[in-house]
Length: 140
View (cartoon, rainbow, N blue to C red):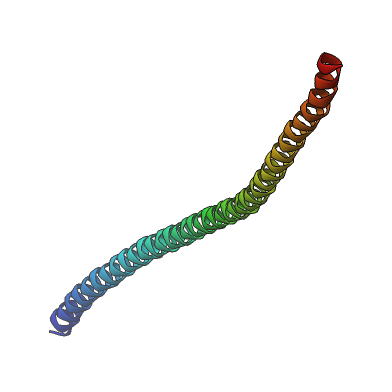
């Protein structure tokens, strides 16, 4: 009977050891699966961080390009503004010069008229002087 009990206990012990080994194997398998999942998640997280870094860099580059373009546009606008001011100054100078030329033209016209009147007067005076001397020659 002791042999039967002993054999039964051995069978139970073997059965428990088998279940324990199966449980141990299951725990190991589960742990392996967890490690694989953890590694996969870590890789995905690393990929996400790389993507975020790439996007951050790309946004920074685009922002820099935009700032450069804005600065370029501002510079061009300032250049245009300066050229407009220069043109305005030149236009004012031209208007002033034109006004001076018109004034000079009026002065020259006045001088021309005065000289014409003086010439006409000289011609008239000369005719008056010649007339009496002709009369003297004819009458004498």
